[in-house]
Image (cartoon, rainbow, N blue to C red; front, side):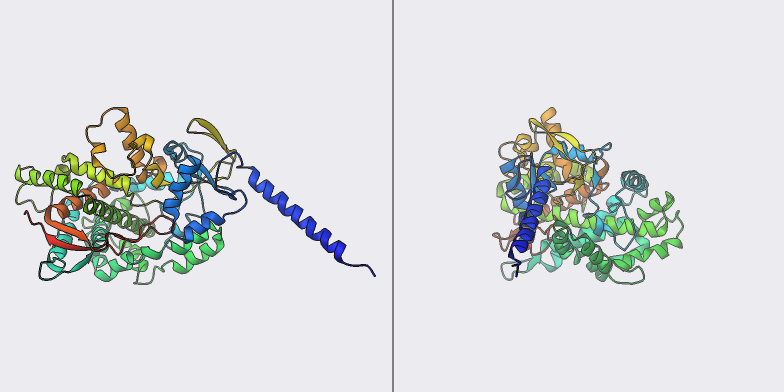
Length: 501
C-alpha cells in the first residue's frame, strides 16, 4: 500500500515554490528603491503604523532614514520630495488619483463632487465652474460675514469661559474655533437665505462628525479592502430626504430649484447656479467645501494657538506688534475686528501664521497618486529613479514642511523670524514649498484666501484680547487620526483677560 507522504510533500513544495516566485515578482519591480524591511513582500509595517496612529512620526522617520523616496509596501512609495510632489500634481502631470483613497469623498452613493472626481479633464471643467466664487467677492459680504461670526465667537469666550482668581472655567478652544469656522463657512457658502443651517443642531452634525470619520477607512485603504470601504461609504452616506447630519445640507437642492440665480441673499452657491450647475450638484459641492474648510481652518487656528502658548518669546513679540498697531492708529479704536488688509500689513503676524502653517500643517493627508501606465523617470535628490506604471506614491507633508535644505537646519523648531527679511530665490523657494500644504497645480485649494483671512483675523483678535494657558501642556491636543485629519478636541485652556490691557 503506497504512502501519501511523498505526494503531500511534493504538493507543499510546489506551493512554496509558487509562493516564492510570486513574492519575488512582487518585490522586483521596486527593488531599486530603498525602503522598509519586508516592504517588498508585505504591507504589515504600514498597516501597523496606521492602526497605532503613529503614521505622522513614522513617515518622517522613514523619509529621514531612507531618503526622499521610500518603499513602504510592495507597490507603494512614500515621498518627502517637494519637487516630486509638484511634478505629480502639475497641470500637465500624467499621474492619476488613487480611486480607492477618494472613494469616501462621495457624500452620497454615486454622487460626485470636486473632491471625488478622478478624471482630470472632468475635474478641471468642474473646478472652473466653482473658481469664480472664490476669486471674486461678488456680493462684498465675505469679510463682514467672517467678522460677524468671529465677534460671536469672541463674545462667547468673554461671556462663558473667562476665568478669574476666584473661579476657573475650562474651555475646549479647538472645538470652539471649529464651531466658529463652520458657521462662518456655512453662511459664506449658502448665504442668509439658509439661516436654519446655522442652528446649533445642524452645525453639530458637521462638527462632531469628522473626528472618527477617517479612522476605519484609513485602515481599510491600507489593507486594500476597497469593497468593504465602498460598502461603508454607502452605509455612512446621508440620504437627501433626511433632515439630520449631511442630509439637511444636501436637502438644499430642492430649495435651490425654487431660488432665482439672481437672488441677492444667496452666498457662493449663487455663482455656481449662474455658471450652469444643477441644484443637486451645487448641494454636493457646497457641503464638500464646508467640510473641507471647517476641518482645515479650525485645525490651523488651534495649532497656531498651541505654538504661541508654548513659545512665550514669540507670543510677546506678536503682542507688541498687535498693541502697536492699535496705539499707532493702524487699527482704529472703534474697529471691533481688524480688517484683513491691515492684518496683511503686520509682518510678524504674517510670519507667525506662515510659520504655524509650516510647523503644524492643518492636514497631512497622503493624497496618493498613481504613476502613469508607461512609468516615469523622476529626479529625486541627486539621482534619477524610474517609477513603474501603476505604482502608488504617497506624500509625507510633515517631512516636506520640515525639509532642512529648504527651511534651514532648525526646521524642527517654531521660529517665525525665518520668514522676515527674506528676499530672492531662497524666499521664493521657501514660500513655494510651504504652500504645498494647500495643494499644487490641478489639486490647488480654491479657498486659500478665505482660509488665510479667517486665520489671520482669529489669531490677531485672540492674542489681542485674552491670555490663555493649556491645562494639560504634556498633551495639549489629541493626536492625528489615521489618514491625516487632525482630531480637533481636547484642547482645554484657561482663558483670562489680558493683564496689560
